[in-house]
Image 1 (cartoon, rainbow, N blue to C red):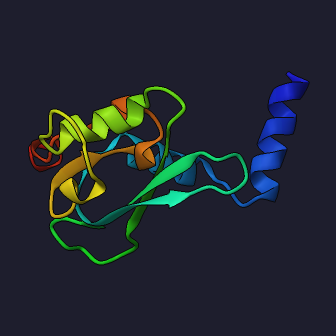
Image 2: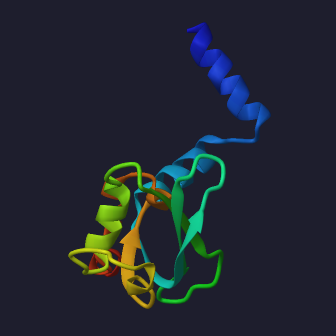
Length: 125
């Protein structure tokens, strides 16, 4: 019981109400549509790995922030990148520019492979 009280106190200190937590939960499970406007490789000089950076804008345009996604390349298969590749309709990604101009759906900021889907997922909600 004391653990629950301390968690509730932490939420209050940081300004989280039950309503705000519910809105965040709903946003994490709601699908939204996006269009990739730029994608490219960026070498990571620290450990020699390469990052794929993907930037997308909301579709249909509702304003707000753009979505930035980062995928680590060269350390084995990235399930998240494979999921994004399938979501935009590609069988295989040979170059980042193949992603540009393509549409997809995402939920919860694309944290896991299960958070990517074709655009019709967002439209059909």
